[in-house]
Length: 160
Image (cartoon, rainbow, N blue to C red):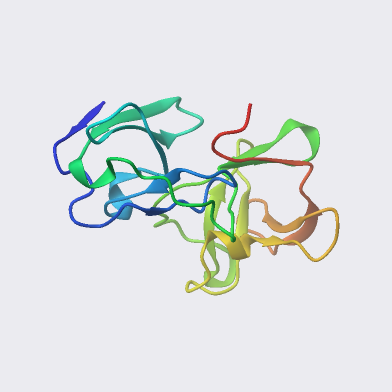
């Protein structure tokens, strides 16, 4: 996909929360799903991750991103995480589904479950309890009451 000229639509570039490496940025409205972008050459060209599971990316051409090189975000959010039994959960830019007790989800999972946050004002970073070495998340299955479960791994933009 080619996002064309002025894809940032006057909103960005700004540090991407989806990478712990320098030089990654996001831009534009959330609906554009330009989650993590990296300058690719000169003149305002960049490659942006839009959907990790769908292997969708966009080539963005916007003069505002030329030379972007800010340091990594101090508050990172994974693009995808892994739970037990091979279940993966990936970030979405919009969520209009109904969830248990009107909670909110930024991470639907491959088995139909979802990772929940209790307050719609909580962003995707608050999905994970990082207070110990092993992260945990509130996992809801079949729209039921969530249970605290371990996160086995997390992927960020720029990882190899």
